[in-house]
Image (cartoon, rainbow over all chains, first blue to last red):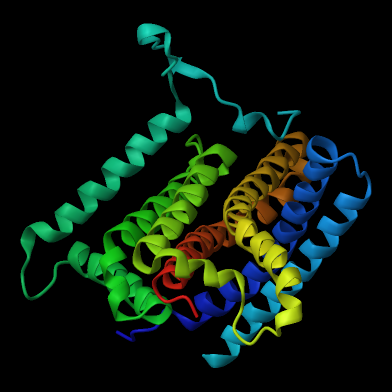
Length: 73
Length: 241
């Protein structure tokens, strides 16, 4: 029994995980910015714009990190 | 049959409201008890013989345990084995929920965002607790990736906070969306089979058969992704950078 999980499983798992991760970063970033706009400061629409930008950067960074881990195996 | 989402609706089977608290039993709760019972039964059953030459059930259980152990070793290293009970029960529970949900008439518990959300948030909060317990305030260092130039730090901290918060969200939404989407497609194709009658019904029905196989694969892959990401987050808490 090999110590590492089934290669097909592992590869598919790694690939499928990137997409939702990017989407979730965008949602969280945009949501935080929107929340800051509406509930904390009356700065609409700038908070949401900044939040979406940060979320986009975070999502791309996460995807890049996932791809890097993939290369090691 | 007109509404492909009606199979996800939950109605109380047994109404229980002791002390005014609504703990009515519905199909999803019943399925969760069933799945938990089945997992416990299978695993203790596999252990019962305990012979050197494994029985059929025992070799399946050994295969699963080896698989989960390999997953933990690859992502967390050797000292991750202390989380083996958590990871193994999470994997087996989600896997059996996904697989048993494919039986016609059964309910797919993981198609409820409430269930996957509680799992994801619970796992994420646990990884934070573990991280802060082991490393104290130094654990906040995960917010600044190594090798960041000083002038970038004020920008990197909000970005890292967002990517941290995105972890439970993506964990919960991925499992929920995959299971829900698969069952909606199966439901729509079955509805088409019935409305197609004898002349055309065979076409969507053959798609249903093919998709059913795909759904079994997805049940495995989604359970695997959920647990492997749990391992990755726990590993980050054990060894930040």
